[in-house]
Amino acid sequence: MPLITTHDGSHSIYSEQYGVTYHSKFGAVTESAHVFIAAGLRYKAAVQRDIAILETGFGTGLNAFMTWLEAERRNLNVRYLGLEAYPVPEEEAHALNYPLGLGCPERSADFLALHQCEWAVPHPLSEHFVFEKRKHRIEEFEQPDTFDLIYFDAFAPQAQPELWTEEVFANMYRALKTEGALVTYCAQGHFKRTLKKVGFTVERLQGPPGKREMTRAFR
Ligand SMILES: C[S@@+](CC[C@H](N)C(=O)[O-])C[C@H]1O[C@@H](n2cnc3c(N)ncnc32)[C@H](O)[C@@H]1O
Image 1 (tube, rainbow, N blue to C red):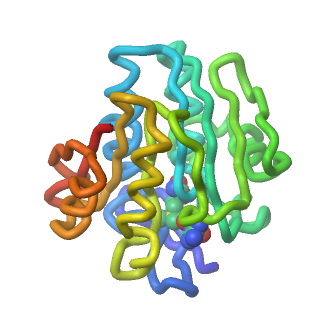
Image 2: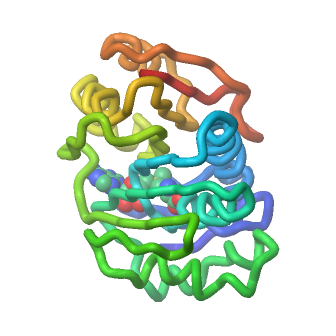
């Protein structure tokens, strides 16, 4: 899995299997901060402190790590479930520069704990962040009425069309609690029509650098 450096200096990984990078080449941390933390977590945190999050897929752990840091900053109670079918090997996780890039090199052990911890068990990593990861396929995931927020972070529809189907988003819709929200970097027309078809109310937001738009959708 070749490591690349994105425009903001943070690392990403190139997936040889899918022929795409795990994050925007314009900035992995910048994209994560804009799409998932600002438009997702902070948006929800404005109205509630207890937030259950589903992430598809967990990948490098960047979204999970930034969520943990933000939960501590804002005194939130976050329960986090990350799904991942093809885990990043631990040696690769060691090479990622996220704690340094986020200005908290002293949290490197915490970042690695996300990769080292046992699968399919909830870990209370701090009083603000309970973390679980499951080796589970996104398209087979069903857990109704559980989550306040979904970080939909699969590879793009061109790379993985099987994850951007009506069936998958009908499951995502059901997995949300009423008024739950899904955020994603993707803003393609076909994708937004699929969201509407399964019942979501769709909002267009300004995208991170290099992308005109992103999407937030509500149950
Ligand atoms: C865009 S990357 C996610 C980046 C990640 N959120 C992060 O913060 O680094 C997409 C992830 O989905 C995983 N994935 C691909 N197909 C999957 C599937 N069918 N089920 C679960 N995870 C899958 C990939 O291995 C990859 O880690």
